Image (cartoon, rainbow, N blue to C red; front, side, top):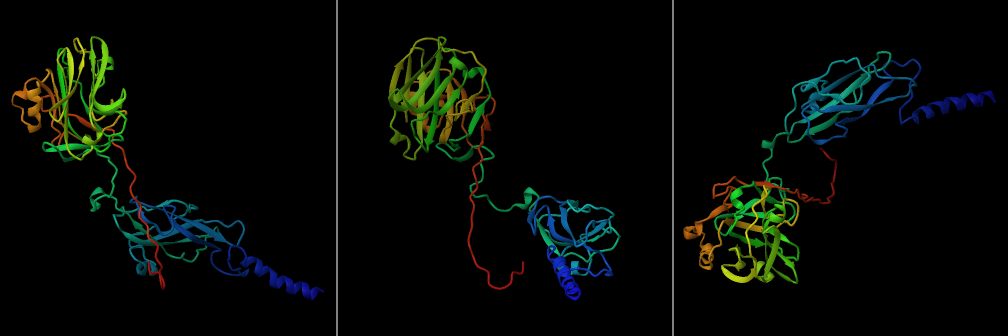
Length: 394
């Protein structure tokens, strides 16, 4: 019986040791560290590509078959290639022996790495008795593109981070709005709030003509606001005008065909008020009138917006070009002249003129507009399944 017990111990104990995370047992008199470094990570990742910090951090996990073991020091080597690393040289960085138990987020501590650099690295540690471990298995990492100038491509479906873009317009260039968050804010100018008469005009090419309100121009001063928009309201779709008159907000519209507006062409929309009547024009032709009587309200100092309600909602989808505000009611003859783009007589009384010809300047002498409310759209993602035959080199 005693003989069998001895045999069982001899066989079972090493088997138990090997079962500890797959580590082999060590004889009682073996030399060297009983701590090893495994599962090397750079910036928390294994073999990462696209590291975005020029001084990345290194981490590893300690393994030991001995209770109470710990790291007393480490040495990290970072090399430009695996061959250099295999010769135990760190031509990028050699930390030397560092007395420390730190094994998480050890920072690279020499000259910052540059875009696209590919590096190999490894580490060895010393145990609590000062005995060195073997070098770890090598690991690799690759730097990303760290500078804006490194990017040479053109984004596909890039987010609209710079606001509305300029596109070919009816007269030179125009702005193209996404209908979800883009608009142009115009600083307050008292000239934009005339007292007796007004004309608001713009070229538009909408990409969508739903029932929702879509603002072409709006100066949001409470009941004293000015409005030019397209929408369905009061049972019809059409061109709408809103004005503060005698302390009340008056909103009127005239029917305008959706099919006409979404034919892919530019259309001139204009409203005038002469103190007694609001008149509506599309492409230089009158499409409706509405009675109103009184002086325009001039109070308010809020900005005007091209393409939205106060920068918050009712965003216009599509192109807007050559937005004009006059302090008088243009005649039907003058409105017929607007499609030519020439001022002539139609330049008299022009108090706001945003040609949108590559910039947001006010050609009538006011302050330039500012693109605001840009919305970031999601970038597309691509994937492709494929099979690899043979060993992967990298």
